[in-house]
Image (cartoon, rainbow, N blue to C red):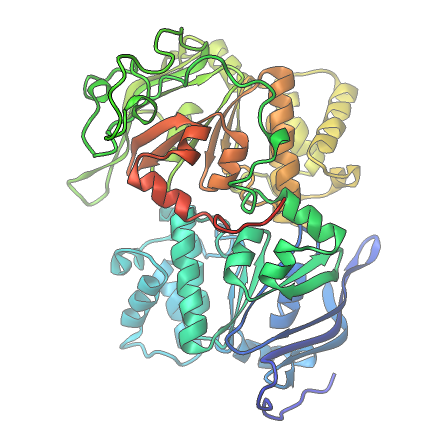
Length: 601
């Protein structure tokens, strides 16, 4: 296609996509990933493209910036950026545009940073490549860029490697790289999927300020409809490579016309967070009181009596502490009832890390106590660095606690050895946060799911193959996935494979570390429904780690809120979401995207 050099006419959109089609060549023949896409993006506008995995939203964005895989190409249409057709631009021209005029924040923070290069160096490369800094002042600009992306202690962080960052910090580093050159258009592909709600809000507020102050346009690729409704002026809904509906954001989400859009809105927990559908609740609420979850401090910040003595014999302060305007009850609600049978009891759990080059130790988890009733879901929520994932890893005995005890079915987990430890690892299975690094890239999907069955000698080859096919059906993956490899799957598809693997041994407890953060809303809804149904049928217990409070409300019976390694509030899910006592909990709830939207589902 001929490349135009005429200047952008006054009033014309910054980006005009017309009748674009994208095709991928595969061993099974051509795959039409995008067909007949038309869209406009004005200067300073934020446009959200939503849809499930495989809908073509990310492919459309990658076509704009010229980063399609080697087997993909734009087969028709035009992509006009400032009047220049990028669909036919040579690679040398695209290299000068990428970063400088069109910035990109890719979806996966784990695989899009060079693991052997310091974070600051990776940002400096972008600035130097586009002559936006000199060797003399590049370090200063790197620190300014990291600070603008919300990273504290930016000068120190610039000297660290990606493996020293949490998932949320890595995502912020990618955002810093994408914004480093002050581009006219920023393509943000799921820019906050790895971030907790408060940091997510901070990042999105920063992007919004860029749009208004600098005139930067934003193409936001997301599966979070609440986020799209809050942050975008217009929304485009894609399904199977085509645009099925588009228009003003609030109009699309408050009054969806297309059946696919209606299904997205109905399935989105971020939109439905304060209006749970009745069928999502457990069929029978537990008659017993909340589990023995003792926060380390009261809402005022003072240690509770139970925490001070290292006990877990007190009901959570969030349940029992009376309000200032209420008389103190002689006994906590349900105090005379027997405590529910617990499959897990955690008491005084603490993890201290030695910090290299420093005399000060780092307390990742401090004096945390809670229990998990059989057949129930206890969720741990909090910002990145709050200690929730470290707690989960100690539960799995991946990380050894510094002090405290974890009892699983009455047994001290730290004391398990040999056959008992092997049995424990069968009964407690993980679902990790990152579907990119938790799957062996050299294994087929069939081998990944069957591996635990083979290791623990479950059934013969024929029975294992049948079990794998059943698990694929359970997580809504087609049988054609069996011969594929992780690199051939989307992020959401990879996470479903990880969930299928965790279910393979029919465990009693599943430790879910952000298990649906990489999934679009329809698949997310399917997986949460699957987890709930399996719990009802088999009496499974879950420890559910998440930064997505809307998802937590859908899935959890009880919620523990962590901050800076400590438990600050704990109660039933309904109490936490309707009557939060700690200011930190209230701040988390206020940060949920779409929390204030009145959208019927």
